[in-house]
Image (cartoon, rainbow, N blue to C red):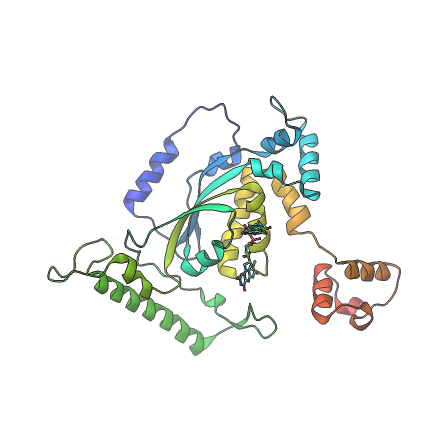
Length: 315
Ligand SMILES: Cc1cc2nc3c(=O)[nH]c(=O)nc-3n(C[C@H](O)[C@H](O)[C@H](O)COP(=O)(O)OP(=O)(O)OC[C@H]3O[C@@H](n4cnc5c(N)ncnc54)[C@H](O)[C@@H]3O)c2cc1C
């Protein structure tokens, strides 16, 4: 992911500007504001702006007049209580705005999260960049046999090379045709003065899903964590998960107390159904429970064992 000289200059200038403010700030985010964090081969995440910090959550929860914060351990206790008991509105008082660049197929998953405000790069108005996601060889998984929405072992040798060759060749070809249809190159220079060229809004239809797009994405902290709980999860596709994991680090820089509570009560927590809790109780009382005697389906049983990190041999 390389930014051109003009973009680097703009970023550098932004980073040197400082303002005094009466508003609450998050020192961890101030340190990384505007910085470009690379993701995948051409993507990135940058934090553009934000509102609020950990103290804003406790202030809102206490509907306080002034500073609203108490001792750090009292604030931490309150944040943990709110998150544990799904008292969500205080977390909606904080917001973050990011600039994200991602392949179109990642963008399709991203845009399913309706509780954000989004503005996307317009391929009706502007020419798409000649940037296509080509996976690292260790991401070329085969179709999973157990999970229809997942990947299995990694392709190797000639088959892996053939996949990479196809992806690179097709990306080059569709971009060449895109320029030909537009009668313009990536820089907007006319290729043949005797041709008119097709409108940008039409020429884009031939572009493949691994071409990159860019979004401005603004979301409140509650829905930001909801996004992370779904997309920073092992069940999420790798290509969106790597963005979510980067955002998880940004969460830590922004609201460290909330991040800790999120990791404890959401990300690394284990949920049990009524039947799962009954099985856990029986096990604690010393009963040898098997899938057959558990009353759980095969899939539920596997998820139960994985959730509690129980090895089948231990049962
Ligand atoms: C692993 C995984 C696999 C997936 N597979 C598929 C798939 O095969 N096909 C597919 O179509 N999608 C799929 N999705 C997308 C998924 O169904 C959700 O659309 C996406 O995760 C956004 O979640 P959300 O609606 O909770 O988030 P948001 O849109 O941010 O909404 C947050 C919450 O607000 C509420 N809300 C928002 N809008 C409405 C509304 N209009 N009506 C009622 N309540 C609302 C809901 O409580 C919702 O949970 C998948 C997601 C994941 C993580």
